Image (tube, rainbow, N blue to C red; front, top):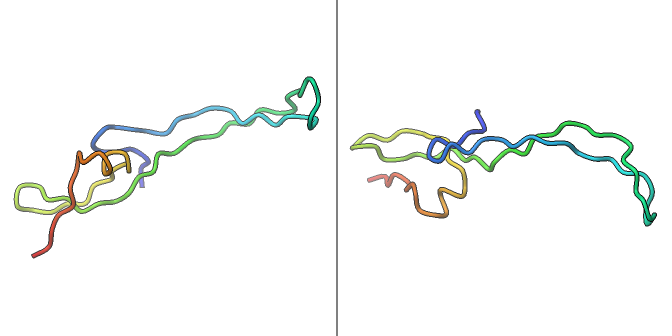
Length: 74
């Protein structure tokens, strides 16, 4: 499943994880930098689309803000 919201196009953020040396030291030196990725919280949701229902990938921010609504089953 792609980590991209189909409503707001939120996608993963990329950065580095810093491993630091020394606990409680004045200068905590960086030992290693490794690449990491922050994925948005993507949920698969069934949505009404003009009488039909379809599944889309939506982030929880769009669900909570009310940008998308669940399809009601009859």
